[in-house]
Length: 116
Image (cartoon, rainbow, N blue to C red; front, side, top):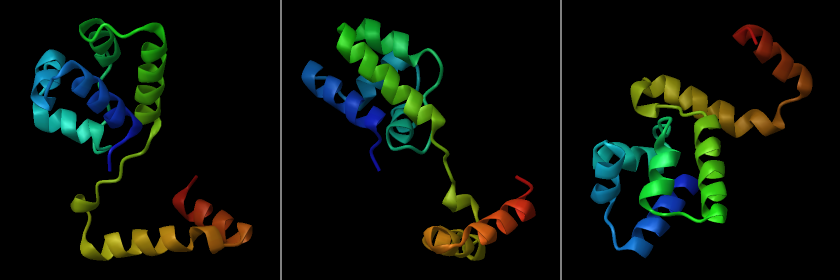
């Protein structure tokens, strides 16, 4: 799923007539890695903001939006479902579907089990 950072990058690439590979080269990474970041499967490395601001000559408002998007991407937790067993994936998805229906006492018991 394309993140806000991914949408931002895609827009500035299109506006500049650049491809994903072009931006990846500017950032010193593979197109596959940049795609993972844009799709929320990896976090943007430190320093990308400055490179993008400089190379795409972003104005002040665009720079602020870029920094917001990157901060949000860095604060978002990534869960790698492919690294889980099928049983663990099923358990996690069942939990996620039921979370909003759990009573606070049940949530507190789960927190205690998880040690948080």
